[in-house]
Image (tube, rainbow, N blue to C red):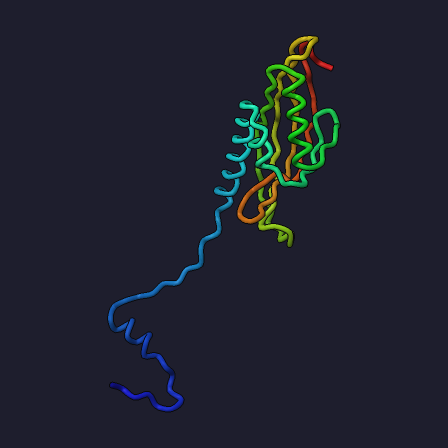
Length: 173
């Protein structure tokens, strides 16, 4: 067995690996690509659209931060996931055939380190809504912007603002 001189580098374990033809590669996990991240946000939005169609209040709220801040298309402020869930519950109780759909046009990831979360992102797009009131049906349309925040590996909506631009039908306010 070889002896090591005092002060000589201790490379024997590495030498054994090299001489035996083995190699060791240590890689840190690759962060998700921007394409993967934006696809994840888009999928979360589509899941929320499905939840609205299915009137699944828990699934609608699932994609929101607990302290979400939102402004409805007509300017009503909603603070908190529970308040948002209640607003949908009220719509489902008072109106018939409620359907809101968000269609993202652009999702852009921030390159800033906020110190608060893994990442933040901006989503912008158009939204449509339809429902039936006692006065008749209504179709609404507008634009929206949402801020997404990634915490603990999960994207959720931190804030969003909707702007109603058109309404048609007898059920319009």
